Length: 238
Image (cartoon, rainbow, N blue to C red):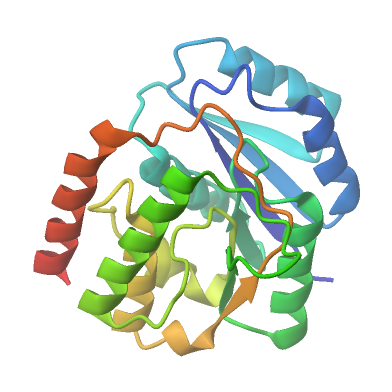
């Protein structure tokens, strides 16, 4: 039976991380080991993560970093820590607010295993009865980012930014082997790397349903200069 490691990056998530949803994830995915990654939080997030791990011994672990370096580096360092300690068949990540429903993450995992794909990721394609509940601001930002990235790098991907992705062991090094240049656009940087390594065609973009915005997002108008800077960095690098 294949094994799965799930990375959940956490920065100041004391009020957003749901213990009941984590328990549901543990129950719903018995083959998975969940790694809660504390990215130098300044509130009581680390204490909360330790309490949650104690409630699920053998299924939930805490990886803690003293310095806040952003979501991209938290995920990357978490992935590398997991790989150094074990070698799961698949490694995925999802957001601490569980904006992607647990049932949809399960469907992603079942699909990548069944299809023996190199990687898989959720895509928030709004269709009739899709159940997507996304703020207009974040939708516009997401569409602009994906459009600019695709026009520059020809990835052929509708939604680069959805925070639910799973990678096979064979693709981990190509995706995470080097430090990221980007933080806000690190998801896109992963796809650019996979294309550069000629393995982008091994992936699956799977439309998901029931995705919802959760309050407390760190994306705002002040993020635009950094997003533009990262886009320019990626353009020069790749």
